[in-house]
Amino acid sequence: MLSSTSPHHRQRVNSAKTVPFPSQQLFILALCRICEPIAFMSIFPYVYYMILSFDITSNTRQIAIYVGMVTSAFAFAEFSSGVVWGRISDKVGRKPVLLAGLAGTALSMLVFGFAPSLPVAVLGRALGGLLNGNMGVLQTTVAEIVTVKEHQPRAYSIMPFVWCLGSILGPALGGALAQPCENYPIFFPRGTVFDHYPFLLPNLVCAVVLAFGVMIGILFLEETHGDKKCRRDKGIEAGRWLLSHLGYKQPLVFAEKSAEVNLDDYENLLEEEAPPGYRTTEGSPRISSSRCQSPGAARTNSKFSGRRVLSKPRGVKKAFTKQVVLNILGFGLLAYHSISFDQLMPVFLSEPISHEPPSLPFHITGGFAFSTKKIGFMLSVQGAYSMLAQIFIFPFAARHFGTLKTFRFVVMTWPLLYLVVPYVVLLPQWLQVPGVYFCLIWKITSHVLAFPSNAILLTNSAPSLLVLGVINGTAASTASLARACGPTVTGILHAWGLEMGSTGLAWWASGIISLIGALESMWLEEVRGRMDEPDVQDEEELPEEALIDPMALDAAINAAGDLPQPFGQADYELHKSDSKVSIT
Image 1 (cartoon, rainbow, N blue to C red):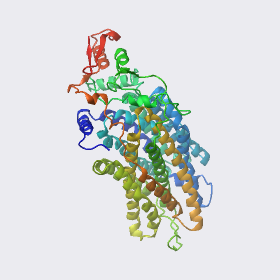
Image 2 (image 1 turned 180 degrees about the horizontal axis):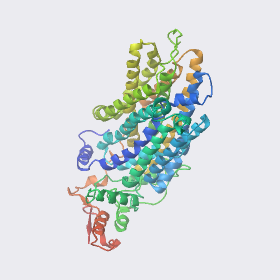
Image 3 (image 1 turned 30 degrees about the vertical axis):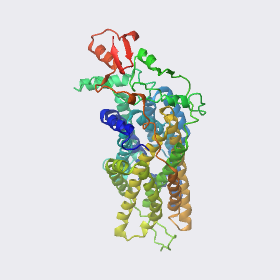
Image 4 (image 1 turned 90 degrees about the vertical axis):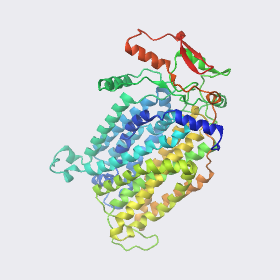
């Protein structure tokens, strides 16, 4: 680890002060991202009752199995298509893939809302996973936006915060709008389409929300792929035109002084074979900055210190270091038992109250028989708390205790949570609701600390931006596979446990998985990441004034009508002595 007083540490601190936090693009990305948790989480309050409405079985103890099938269909399909979407994002850019994921999720919600049977419901969820590859692409997009290590805790807490906000709105929306003919007979009379499809309304609303996200992304989300960001984006142009007519004036864009990619990464990673089915080009070198450059400047920068950057496919044999593999494994274990908790808790809250006396320590049966509205409200309270935890607790813990220590502490406490949850049903009735809230808050606190910590550890352990795309793609596929297996296995175990007279079987099995994750965290190390390495720009004194992006200057001049066409390639000359671009 770097000393807090080392020159490189001071340089990074100074860089964090001079390089502005990319709040605008992260905000736009968050607006697009929030639509997905709203849609994903909205089904949890009513999925138990939806399965009941299909009349598959008269044995309510088997419902958990079918709930697990519906829940895991999305994740399994996402696992099967994650690498494909990662490869597509390398070819066409991040923005088109993110928008396609939102559109695919909207389509799947409509299919799910109109589902008359279990196979159609599973198909709808699977369609959403198949058409959505946003998990890995989103992580890569954030990594490409954030170039200063000191910005990471704040940046990597934004997307989980957005998920938390969506987890408030989603369950509340799903619980309130499900079965509208029963809950709001004045507005939704019997005999209408909402009577025939009682769970259509929340899915229609989610589809509208997702369409809003697609529109925001088209108009305002910028491309971050190093090789694709210079392309003309008619959506961005339309967004700027719209803002200009609303009275918002676009300032002249100056290029940020961002960190360079260390060219030693290329020597280590070139000439290696890429894995079958995935070859990343997302980590294109950003010699002077991440901005778009004129062709002449780009050619000049393709050589630095006498070393030519080759345009050959990047290999990844050296990408999956020991720490990368351990972080991906930890991510998969987290995803497995976390989604198991999310799927199992609403079932636990929905199951009828058991009048059979318990036989401790393992013979415990029954649930709480809560309504969909009450379950949706409780999950929304959980989401509201998670927002506060994401804003205040995680950045504080990451800064004061370090990312690795925070991660280890959280995963060490998780097994105890799974041990005690089944016993909440044994509390006196007046303590049962507070007990449920206590478990939900415990879980979400662990969630908001563990996942961002793991994301930062994984990003910093990547040997180069050249392979960050394939690393995040692999991590996303691993997590999707875990999320596919978790609900199904947990549902089967829960059904078996009920047959044997033990509600806690599935919970304790998840506790064993979390214990494995806790033990695995002992082998993790907070290694020196790519953002800790000194780059070429750190070795020379950079001027304090902002570097003017010539392409942005061209756009401003052309927009004003002062120049009929852009400057030619020869009109730019890069002076490497002071890293400035002068216009001759």
